[in-house]
Image 1 (tube, rainbow, N blue to C red):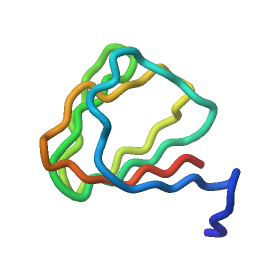
Image 2 (cartoon, rainbow, N blue to C red):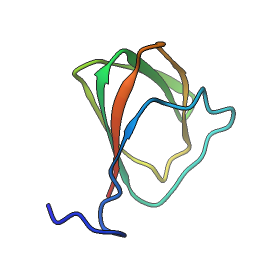
Image 3 (cartoon, rainbow, N blue to C red):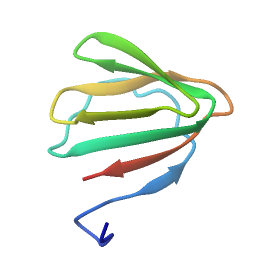
Image 4 (cartoon, rainbow, N blue to C red):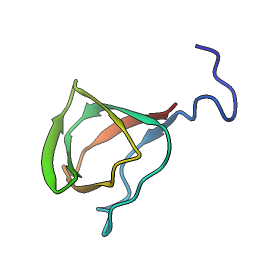
Length: 79
């Protein structure tokens, strides 16, 4: 991959509390959970993503993370 501004937007860290409202954006979101777990809501359906798992989805659908374990660390990449 050629990582540069505007093509891939990688970031790493801890989720900043639960999102209170769904959001959307026009790209593919890839999330790799390093430790802990995170729970997402996609179109009203909840999915839990545990450590060692990858979530990849079209972010043009409303989504939000609604809960995460205290020790959750992860990578986010928007393509």
